[in-house]
Amino acid sequence: MRDILHIRIDSFFASVEQNKRPGLRGKRVIIAAYKGRSGGVVVSVSREAGRAGIHENMSIRQAQRTCPDGVILKADHASYKLHFNAFLDIAAKYSPLLEPDSLDSAYIDISGCSILGSSTEVAEAIASEVNKSLNLSVSMGYASNKLLAKIASGMGRKITCIENGAEDSFLSTISISKLDAIDHKIEKRLNDLGVSTIGQLALISEATLIRQFGPIGVIIKKQSCGIDHSPVKALYPPEIIKIERMFPFIADEPAQILERFQEIAEQASSALRKINMLAGGVALTLFDESKKIEKAASWCTTFKKPTESAYSIHETLARLLDAIMKPGMEVYKAEIVLSNLQQGQSSQLCLLGEGERKRRILQTVEIINERFGEGKVSVASSLISSSSAETFKRLVA
Image (cartoon, rainbow, N blue to C red; front, side, top):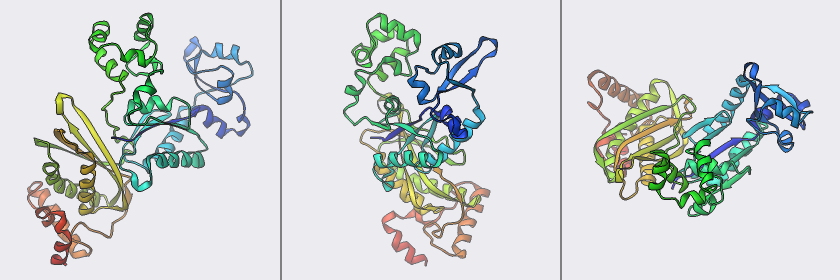
């Protein structure tokens, strides 16, 4: 099961303005986006303005009538982007699977981050660091997929956790408007049919939804049941190394995939050395087409120490594979993402160990492969099992 967080920065734009101008703290701050002569709309409000009845998408004229003493400011998106990137920089330290959702929220897959503590501890650590570093508060949703996590983060609490098996009870009373597949037209038609909650929607058959709304009825049905297989994509920071490998066969056993990881680890190590970088984290995503439904399963972790070692990368991928691979999976592609890149050279250089002589061996292998094609030459570790690693180290020392 995946551990997904959806993190929302509370009253983001308004909070940034209050931090920039301390005199605005405690006041009813309204952030507006203007659209020519037609006026503007509210895009963010402080907690104080929210308690006064102001909300997003309200017209500025209505906001002024509702809250005459409100402080209206024009949105400064450049400033908000800088603050949002600072928030993402913090989140990226906890997992390479970080996907911005909008200019105030993001998904983060913390599966496999046990080295940093439990999922709840990781979530609390992120919230604490964001508050300490940026003076911003967040609301988080924690669940087994992106759909549920996003709905949970909208509950307005520091962290709302949807435990495995509790999805139906959680969704039962939630408004159908919280589902991404439900737009205003669909919501109105469903309301006319007496359907207002996700629990009521889940009782309608897929066939009925298809007849009413066309192909999107399939998506509506899945979302009403809390189903979402979409992976959290590694979209931040942009400085990552991503390697994709299509298999020439459908792999349904871990060993079939594991034997491909040595080549991938060597390619990743080579890419890191070429730019004189170390990787702090790695994520593995397997693309599965079992039961004719394409889906992806992801897992990530951080290295104990930043590394460029093919051996460390290979061993870590093997552990991630063990966590991801489940009976019945039919894997046709793997994606590996190295993140949290930083300048330096690790003391552990692949399976061959330390020393300039061994570094030159690796560089020679890379030169040969670049000239004559990938895979023409490989380090001997690809010929042995990981259980023989220590024996091989002694032989080459």
